[in-house]
Image (cartoon, rainbow, N blue to C red; front, side):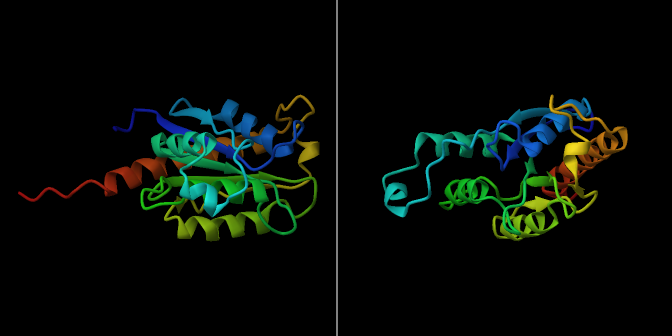
Length: 195
């Protein structure tokens, strides 16, 4: 891939609620994305609770679909709310399922994280916990810029449109950084040529 080629980014949202601030944030990120990024989104709503007995019989179709999406993406964008100081069970369950087996698809994937909350502390603790999980999965999360949006109901309208130009600029800045980070990791993974 050269620097003019777009990358494929898979958006993964940790909330199911129809009027979710984080679902709206993911849609805002898609609209704010530069033309160097092609977006797709994962639907993790139908992934069943993890059960080793079920796993022993093979991956359910919803898990297979999610694993294929992760494997084919150049980079990942996690958009997560914060539940009880941590990431939602829905998101953790999807990661647990998809990461089973030696061929887990997360290894070496670049990723960015963002989150929105109605509260003052945004999603800082959830993002910290998600980063811990991603370390074990050998994902390479982008360090900066971080996006943790407090009182997001004042910035994202009921129609899901971003009302704040400064916040939208931050979304674009993070996605630009994810693009550069992805290219850097792809370039560094190439074998060195020795003359």
